Length: 240
Length: 260
Image (cartoon, rainbow over all chains, first blue to last red; front, side, top):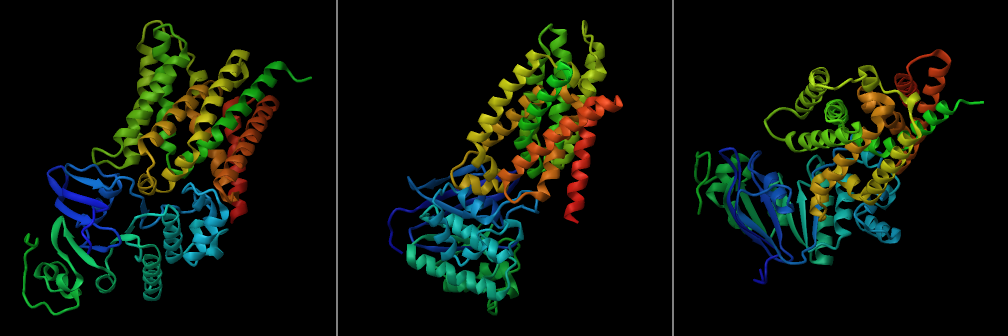
């Protein structure tokens, strides 16, 4: 990875709720063009970290630095719609601030959802929603995309299609991707770097490296998909 | 020939329906009906306090409604209670404190029924001017920040990630609602202000394909409710405020039936 200036740096980011640390001294850099996956069990602080990165979660100590002029794209896990607010897809796209209809249509087409432009957001399937959210995020010409569990609730086929689309977009635009994920196998294939979080960063590095890290196995056990060569029953794994 | 006071009532009522439409839609979309209640109920305390200091009621209403709206906005996420519990506590405590204050404060002679239920038929020209000016302020502010208000409704995280200010959104929404309460109180009373906000919007929701169309339809349903309620009040000698809400409830029923 070229050591240019990072797009975003986390330095000892700590978030406390009462006495409990939701995030404990988390540090990492995201460099241009990188694909990073954030994995960790439920309650590991993944969502807290994402919120801190986009600025809705105040940090107790440490700091997050964005490169000046950074364009950030973000897709939430889902929208809390439930039919109450009528919102056609194209109107949703205009809410990004893009006034030109042709530009919006082109981006929807790039994400394979042009046919949905007049549908209601609330009527979309999970996979369709994620594609529309991705199209909206891309309209801001982001340097960094932050995706919060984009394939949650998709079947294997939908998941594969989503990652295929993401790979194409990375190739076309060179955008860096920081993605929260549950599905470890895909993460291994799709990422330059994996960060394994459980309040603190247990291990991080190239997917092959993380796959062999004992703390990764301690966190994910049998789900790691590779026979653990070291039994580690600690609740929390050790810092390197 | 229509009586001038009925004409004034109709005019003021339609103005309130127009102002209520975008706010009511936001309240429905954000599931914040209780928030409207809390702010509305706080207005009673505002009236009592203003009267005891010999000030115009509207000043007290705006001050207390703003204080309540801000208190609710910035405390609901703390303390470990569910948001609806906190709002319920605020809302009913405000109403009770207002009623007690009205009895205790020296020099306060409050027409309780009128404050609670409103009296649209006594609206004066000065009231109408106040509603028109206040309403113009509210609608202008909402129009200026409309995209942000929709984004914050859909996903506060998405809005923040795109560089929007959640604090500004909260202030715009909260202060507009407080001002609306102050304007609408005389017409429908503190008990039914939330109804004026949410019933027309809830009736419009199933029939609307976009947020803006829902606001337009809400305006139409709200205005029709005002006129229908006034007519009912005139013909059947029923209280005007509740009659308006009864008609709005009928619209809601029709809309819900159509969806089935």
